[in-house]
Image (cartoon, rainbow, N blue to C red; front, side):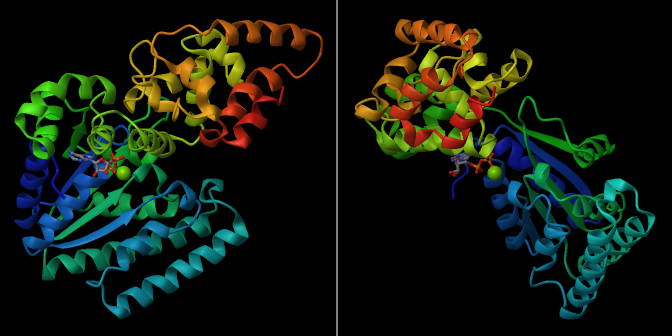
Length: 389
Ligand SMILES: Nc1ncnc2c1ncn2[C@@H]1O[C@H](COP(=O)(O)OP(=O)(O)O)[C@@H](O)[C@H]1O
Ligand SMILES: [Mg+2]
C-alpha cells in the first residue's frame, strides 16, 4: 500500500539497507505511538528488500505470545530461505531448552543450565542467519518488539552484537506508550553505538492534506485539512477512517478509535469510557476507574498520543466513544462532547462518594448506569474491576 508522508523515514531505512547490502550490517529501531505506521513502514521495507534481492525475514510479536518461548525466533526461521536441516536442528535445541524451562522455571531465576541452553539456541540461530547472508543480504524485521518473548530477545541480542560485518539489516519496531518502560532488550538496542532511531510522529496538517488530496482531490483537501487534523490528532488510521466516513465522522472513525485503544492497551478503553462519562473531571476519573493519579496521568497522556484526546484530555470528536444517536450511548455521547461539563454525572459521583462512606460499593452505580447504557464499547471486566474496592 501507499505509505503517505513517511518518505524521510523510508529513506533512512533505504540507506541502512544499502549499507547492509555492502556488508555493513545495521540495526534500526522504528518507534512511535500506536497507529503511527510502524508495521506499515516495516512491511514497505520488507517489500523493498525483496525487490532488491534481499531476503526479508519477518516476525510480529504479540501480547498474547509474550510467554511463548522462542516464538519470535520460530517465526523468523519459518522463512522459506532457511534450509530444512537448519530448521530441524534449531527446532531440536529449542525443544530441549523449552523442556528445561518447564522444569526449572523462568530464565530470570538464573538457572545456569537453562541460560546455557538458551545460549546454544542463540548461537545456532545466529549462525544460521549469518549463513543466509552469504547467499543474499537479509532484512530482519521484528514488529512490536516490546512483546518479544525473553528467550527470543536473548537470541536477537546475540545476533545484533555481531551484525556489523555481515549483510544484514535488523529493524525492530516499538510502541511508544508513556507509562511503559523499555524492556531490557529495547534498552540494549538503543544503546548500540550504531543503532539508528527512526521516530514516527503524528502527521502534520500538510501531511493530512496530502492524504485527503490523494482520495478526494486538492480542492477538498484545502477545505478539510485543518478539521481532519484537529479530529485525528495526526494519527494515520484516524485520518483514513475520516476519509472513509466523509462527510461526517461515523462508524469507521469510532471503530478506528477502539482499534487504536486496543493496540495501545486494552485497559485504556476503560479510562476512555470513564472520561466519556465525566468529561474533563480528572479527579473524579481516578475514583471512577479505581486508579491513583500517578497511574492515571500517563494513561491519559496515552489517549492523547494515539490522537483521541486533545491536550486538555477532551475527546477530539464525540464519535470517539460511539454513536451518540444510539440510545445506549446517548449519555456517554453527551458526556464526551468536547469541553462539556457533565453536571448530572458529577453529582452522581458525589452521591456515590456518600454511599462509599456508608460502606457500599462506591463505583457500582455511578459507573454502571452510564457505562451499561453504552456497554458495547466497554468491557464487563473493566466494570467489575472498578468495584474491587
Ligand atoms: N503514512 C501512512 N499513510 C497511510 N496510511 C497509513 C500510514 N501509516 C499508517 N497508516 C494506516 O494506519 C493504520 C495503522 O498503521 P500501522 O502501521 O498498523 O501502525 P502501528 O504499527 O504504528 O500501530 C493502517 O491501516 C495503515 O494502513
Ligand atoms: Mg503495528
